[in-house]
Image (tube, rainbow, N blue to C red; front, side, top):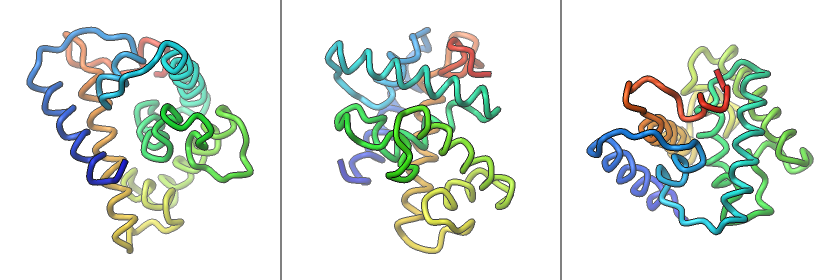
Length: 171
């Protein structure tokens, strides 16, 4: 999937989700809805396992689970279509979903501390620099921002305040 297709899909998902009445969805269902996936039962079970890992790590590192999920989605598509993909794109030597999630959470937290904003932290995660200086980094930061918006739009419940992963204890 190209970045342009990804951004178009996220925009359509956000538009559809904002225009339709909010309803409570289980977190894995909300991710599937937000990004327009059609999953087989084994792939859906794998997605739920990965979400559980991301929530556990987000809680341990006190980072917003939606943000961690957005970064991992942009990096690998949550390894849904390519099961061998590195979950959060955090180095090929870091093996396993939990280690990937921990590496990503730590990198985002360090980036936020050093760069000052989450947006710059995303740029640092992709390029190693706080300021997005290349078109690729600009597109990456935009993709994470759009993914985060889609996740949060998909997570809105009737009260409009609940996080996508809140029901799993992420906050």
